[in-house]
Amino acid sequence: MPRRSPNPSPEAEILDRQLGDAIRRFRTDLGLSQQALGTRLSLSGQQVQKYESGANRVSASALYRIARELDQPVTAFFPSPSGQDDLDDLLRTPEGRALSRGFSGIHDMEQRRALGVIAGGLARRPS
Image 1 (cartoon, rainbow, N blue to C red):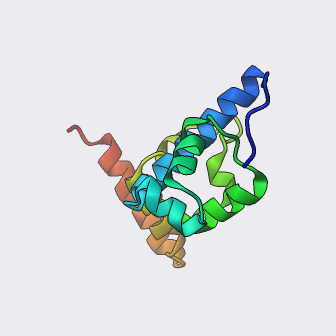
Image 2 (image 1 turned 30 degrees about the horizontal axis):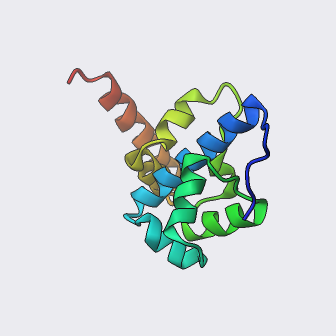
Image 3 (image 1 turned 90 degrees about the horizontal axis):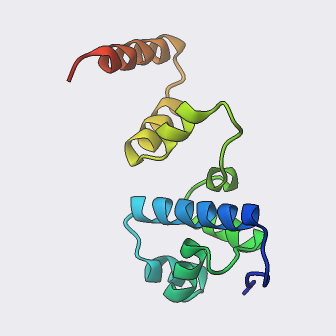
């Protein structure tokens, strides 16, 4: 398995941790243990733990396999370009990802607009 270079750049270390956090978030959303995900990937649970902690780098091919097992696009594991903070916040929660998947399944534009109005109204409503 790929290991960390002896002197990774600070940017690489940050990205490794963000990638590991995303793997953990998607894995736990599916209710999988590290061991269960490792078994699906023919890896040990310890290797999954090392990926999630950023101790070991995830190769491109390993990330592709992980993304397939966690039912996510590979791009979901990386930070979004600046200016997409609201979308990032939405996709960080299981409810937001479920909402996004459900919305994608609505093909009627009137229904999509209606859902937007409902969500906007709920957001302005005092709790």
